[in-house]
Amino acid sequence: MHKKYQIHQYKKINLFQYDTEIDNIYMKLRFHCSNLNADQYKFNFVIDSKCSQCNKNKQETIHHYFMDCTKYNIQRLHLKNNISKLHNNFVKLTNKQLIQIIEGIRDIQISDIIYKNIYQYIKLYIVTTGRFIN
Ligand SMILES: [Zn+2]
Image (cartoon, rainbow, N blue to C red; front, side):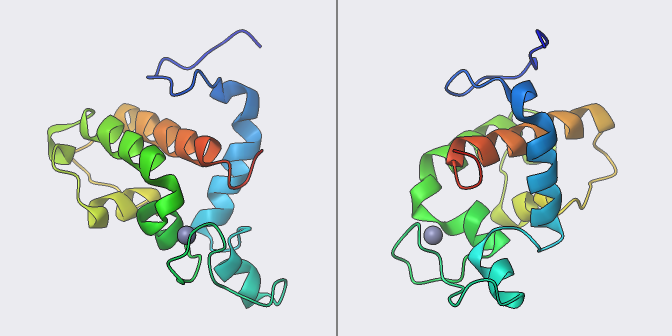
């Protein structure tokens, strides 16, 4: 378990340590069956779909978690900065582009290697927000 990912590290977190767990969390997020309140609410696992991490009084959806939630402003800034450095198409990364990337919609001009790096940054976001792993 000595392998570390060659990406810019935020808070020196070794993603490899969490890899399978984060892959599972990310997959659940994409399929809208995650631990976010809006997903849990659909299955009657919680009584409120609102985000309890901030005071914006919004549903805790994948969009809210990645785009809006004020609790994760710093992590979001890192995510956007890191992705914007990977390809010219992402220099001025919009929220729409970002959510498309997160949901797995790919730009055909961009290589698998770049996407592999992007997904590492998304996973880093998931870890550093601490929303699913403490
Ligand atoms: Zn929130």
